[in-house]
Length: 147
Image (cartoon, rainbow, N blue to C red; front, side, top):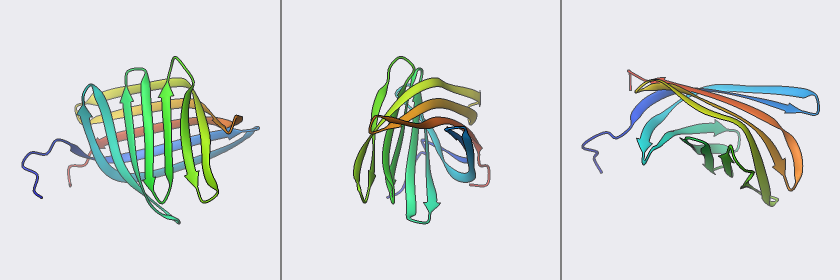
């Protein structure tokens, strides 16, 4: 299958996640390459993460006051975000499917240009009804001119 017109921009993505749990703080950071595109008033980033368990395909979607992170492959997870209400999600593991819930504290998408921007997401995460921590995700992306 050949693409006649590219409807996405190849981007370099830098993602930093800070997790605060019971006074402890952990920061995870990595850089990867992916695709950025707009569709129906929403902004999308698609990228792959290579973990010990295998490759995880990730899609991040942001639209005004809502967001969605979908992960598939070696890890399956769906997290929904809405500044106005708690949202349900799920995480599938070898031990079964767990109910997740997010309380979004901040959700913003700043476009620095047509091909460069930053997504900031701060939320409380609960699993099976118990709060597991506060997450702060900062995703920056910029057109990959070498792609």
